[in-house]
Length: 279
Image 1 (cartoon, rainbow, N blue to C red):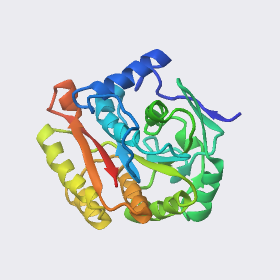
Image 2 (image 1 turned 45 degrees about the vertical axis):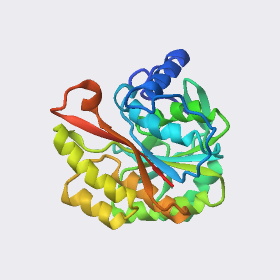
Image 3 (image 1 turned 60 degrees about the horizontal axis):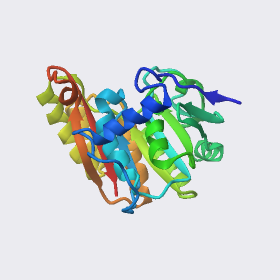
């Protein structure tokens, strides 16, 4: 079987089942997290989300806010998850088509039918496993998803080396076409401003987040370029904005913003993290 093995297990998150579960639960209970374990007692239609992808020590508590909210939605058939290509390997828009991805919690089956549909609908997406081999941005989301949803869902991993407006909008439209045919959850994996003083990062990221919440792609790219915001997955963010708007989302909701400085204490050079859902 063609299985994608973990690339950053033991670095970004623990490698044993017990330690990984404890780490995730610590993120939920953290002061920057939601402060409690997730439940599915309150049902809410969530069209998609933005989550950070640093090591759990740094961005896990922020990410936990999004996963806490997602736990209240119905378990999806397929989680469509995409982020930036940090290594520059493979296709410009690479859709994974391995049989499964492995984590300490077990294997998650790749939705091969959805992968084929996306490549058919999109003029820019290719089936390409090589781009995913080393990258962490999607891998770190999977244990959180398994924690809240169990193992009764498939995944469709996509990684973007090109993230301009045209590419992101085209991909978002194609993802919406795929999502209309099945029960899905759509996630964009991105961190925000990288390695700037705390006040600079907060100022830039707040402007960008305002544009994200309004689902205005033109304003979003305008802020991104005018302020030179170094969000690594800026195209992934634009893609999820496009997809969820097509599917009926009216707005974004900021659940939590924090930086590495809020966790580690050093605010001289920080990375921004945000959890946003679309409703």
